[in-house]
Image 1 (cartoon, rainbow over the protein chains, first blue to last red):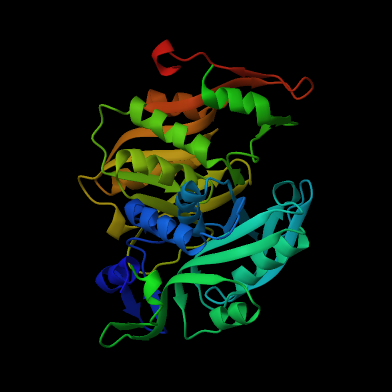
Image 2 (image 1 turned 90 degrees about the vertical axis):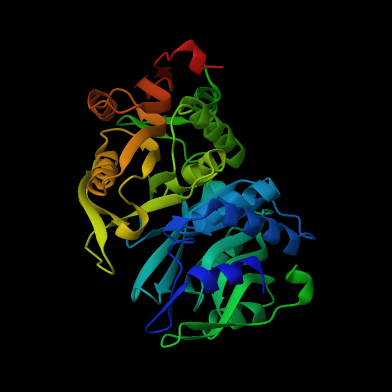
Length: 199
Length: 199
């Protein structure tokens, strides 16, 4: 069990409807020391990759991405979510459907900050159905840049996002993959990952 | 002239209507090395303060707050903006008016993450009319916590927010205070700050 899985067991709360609340350390209150360990681990998992930019999405991906960026020594761009196009200069826009909020959103990145040849690491806090992630990938590809890897804090392994993204051939690294949760007992089952990644 | 003022002169763009665009390094693409210098400078300016929590607001405050938190070794809480109350558990809610977006928003923080006795440093990227900041201050006070200081990257000194907050007795430290801009020449005038702060 790695440091993030341990922390999820300690402070995560399983709610009805397969909701895992980690707002005491990940996505409302943020444990910056923990984020440092996550950044270090992302650096290790993507050690072979040449990366010149990290892309994330507002709001809860930003903190993790910024701390991780210190290990890669690259700038971070965060995509904005909007319900309406807000064209000022030229923007990449991807339409995505939110699972949790049951509405359509646009994911927007200024064309100034993603270019042909950029080697991008995408970072986000959660992966469930992967809608936001698909929007980010489509924007990177539209820019003529390449997705060198995708780093996620917590993946809900029982939803389709992770499998779909891996099937597409991307190197997707989730620090914790939750394969099941039981709201009655509060228990959380993690997918075993390769030993080399668990040190 | 300090490192942030220099960077604003180099990469900031003055647009019509007193708009200062700093999206290439501060609030869309983020220069994490620059954020490190900002964090270090906040630590120096609030050296005498005992701080146990940083509070910021989504989205563009989060990166600066997380990097700064490494110098204070404290967790970060980010307030959420919402157009409607989203009560899950108990929340502090402040109603604020956005100057740039000309609409009312709610600033929301879970009661779990702000308590009586907390010594809070508020951090944000921009201060203009100070609406968001007033919402954050009111939430800290409602929690029975204290605002030990307020750290801002860029203050628009010709708008009312900074003066109002200082008049209320808060230690407000803005790393760059823009007293005037000229969209025709692109020139930017900074307020002189005490020499000890300019090293």
